[in-house]
Length: 392
Image 1 (cartoon, helix red, strand yellow):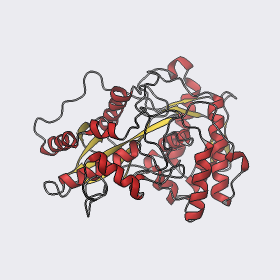
Image 2 (image 1 turned 90 degrees about the vertical axis):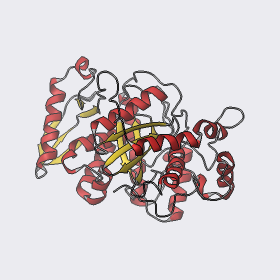
Image 3 (image 1 turned 60 degrees about the horizontal axis):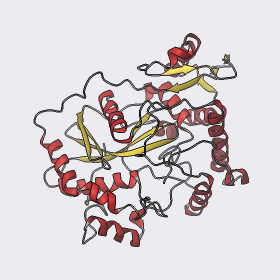
Image 4 (image 1 turned 90 degrees about the horizontal axis):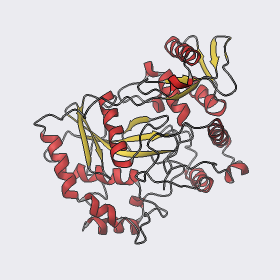
């Protein structure tokens, strides 16, 4: 099972292939991978404990030390989380969720937190600090961020534990086990509040009905039926019922890439202006990958492993789209009420440091994929259609 790079395409680890290979081999040895998206999980996840959050911060310290020095701490080689982690576990997720809320005024559309971290050294430094210490720092000069920070402090002071467990608050802030600390230091506001989770607010009643006539959506569903997903899904399992997660491996982001490639081939003549990308769904201790397609200003979510198609939606940030994603996770994978849920769109699969080489780069495994899918050439699935446009 694969585990994603902590910060997507931030590019902090661009120290050349040798460094990449070194870090990849180290971190693959760091984590013992226990779970797979699609296996039953707790219907209502227990909140992470202070000890689990502390382990994530220790991991973050090792990670940033490597980013800064290129040196691998021996303790990182032997580091193992004491709690179960799935194949898409992101130890930096608490910081990602907190900073997406604090800097929401600067994000939106295709401009993500990863873009902001790449573009603004001060925000990156504050993110690093938070991932290691849990301390939130916002400069007074950034009034929108500081305003959100103040609101979260007030929320942490006012909310009782029972209130924090209620559904349908967008963001919950709470006090750490060490008590609440906040202060003005120079020109910055500092606190140790915990942005516990962005709570899921499911739409009451059944999901909204799609338009009665949507040729693009109908063609998507037809293409997925023709692909025969379940037969190919089974083909990529081992005879003993295990998953084909050797080195290289094939899991949800690989299914998403394969489906994106297939759809780019079968739709390109009828819908040449469609744009293709990916959704990464994360929560504390795991995650999942889906396909996101834009056509004529409308957005569609495709989950390749279940064959579900949802949409159209008005934008990749629409609450209705996020509701649909979490309905898929609940219905198909029994992931309900997770902690730190996050949905982010990208124009490429979010492969990263802790991944083995990818199936589509290995000649033998390319042949295995082609055999599973009944492909006689290097066309659909194995590679995207020439000129396939990415998300805008």
